[in-house]
Length: 244
Image 1 (cartoon, rainbow, N blue to C red):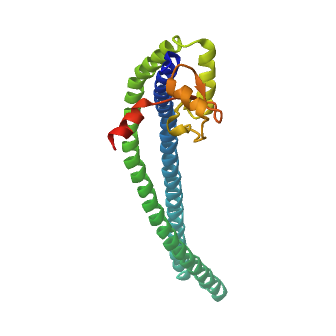
Image 2 (image 1 turned 30 degrees about the vertical axis):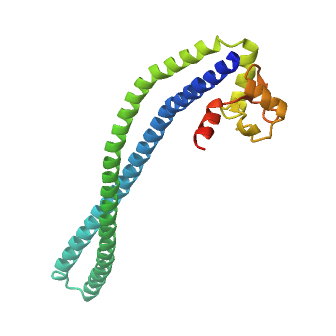
C-alpha cells in the first residue's frame, strides 16, 4: 500500500478515536447542566408545593379564629338576652344570634373544605419533598462520578490529540487538507475499501482502472462518487479464500 495512504488510514483511525473521546468529554458538562437544571426543577416544585400547603394552613387558622370569634359573640348575645326587658330589643338580639349561627355554620363548612385541602396539599408536599430527596441523592452521586470521569478524560483527550498531531506531521499539508475536508464532510470516513469493485462507503461501482490502481496500492486513488480515498484490503481476500 502507498505509504501516504497507510498514513491516511492510520490518521483516520486515530482521529475517529479522538473525536469520539472529545464527544464523550464535551458531553460531561452538558450532562452536568441537565442534572443541575433538573435538581433545580425538583426543588422549585417542592417549594411551590410547600407554599400552597402553608397558604392553606394559614387559611385554616384564620377560619378557626373566625369560628372562635363567632361562637364568642354568640355567647355574649345569649348572655344579653337575660338582661333585656324590652321585647323589641329582645327580638333584635335573637335575630343577631340567628345571623351569627348562620355565619358560624358557613365558617364551619368552609373549615371542613380547607382542612381537606390542607391534608391534600400536605401529602402532595411530602411526596414532592421525598421525590426531591431521593432523586437528589442519586443525582449528586452521578455528579461526583462525572467529575471523576472529567478529570480522567482530560489526560486521555490530550494524549489522543497529541497522537493525532504527530500523525499529521507525517502527511503532506495539501494531502492532509484534502483528507480533513472529506473526513469532516463524510461523517468521519475519508478512507474506504475498493474490494468487490465497489466503494465500501457510497457503494458506487468503480471503473476497472480504479480497481486495478487500488489493488496495486502504489498511487492515491479517489472514489469518483464520494471523493473518499480508496485502498484494497488484501486481508479481506484472504478471509474469503479461507472460508471456501
